[in-house]
Length: 315
Ligand code: FAD
Image 1: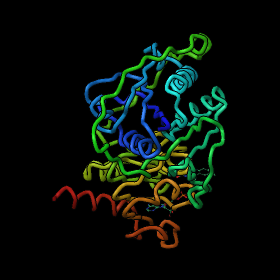
Image 2 (image 1 turned 135 degrees about the horizontal axis):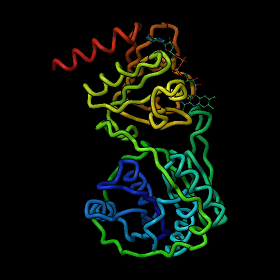
Image 3 (image 1 turned 180 degrees about the horizontal axis):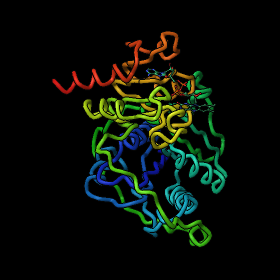
């Protein structure tokens, strides 16, 4: 059976939902092997077994996080060769895409980004033009490198668990010797909120917040939700770029997406239109966001959001 290698970067104590999605997709295409960067603790190890992973490849150097992505791509190329994998699946994050591009060059492999599904014959379905169309294409080189958007596969454990082999892969020394070393990192402030791409509820704010994310954050905390934002809000520096939802931000597919002070431009819709229920709060009744909203509230978000927060807190 063809081997499908999934790259998993620093999972921490448990795999993210998007990683479980990649493992599930990989199993539908062939034998699943993993190239892991980071610790293999017992929780992650159990999940690999549960999802039918047959081998876990790990780098000889535990130092890859101290560099920009070039050594990770070199390690991954070595893991693909060691495994004899025909397909590589990565996150569709900016870093995942950069690693995919570098991996494609190293292996002479075709790369498809923004993938939303893959058929058993390797045909990849790719979301284009801000989610307006889906194209079908197939890589013709021996190795295919695909970055897969989150929330397009339902995670499902294997019918029977596996016992993965552990394999160490030598990281090419030149890739580290010539790599740019990271000298400083900006610490993220821990919010205690769920991860945006995995969250069941997202409360997102846009330019209508006029620099004050307080009402969005308070509603999010009352609901146990993640906070998202339009690009207008992240570009203005009102909230971190990590929170951006849309074509050039994150794709979310929560049960509930509350959009406040966001007009609903096509690039914003691309990242949230698959939410199960969309609630829009906007003071302009003609705003395009109401075209995709299941529930629309025409009003000032500075009145509506605090009232909603108050009511939810009473329950
Ligand atoms: P606006 O369009 O200015 O809308 C603000 C809304 O708030 C208005 O509808 C207004 O009626 C409402 N409002 C104002 N005050 C209040 C109030 N007090 N109460 C209630 N409502 C109020 N955008 C993204 O979001 N994500 C992306 O990933 C993204 N990628 C892009 C990629 C490209 C290549 C390009 C060209 C653009 C991209 N954009 C993206 C930008 C996108 O086109 C829009 O400019 C952006 O989404 C607008 O953000 P907004 O809705 O917050 O602002």
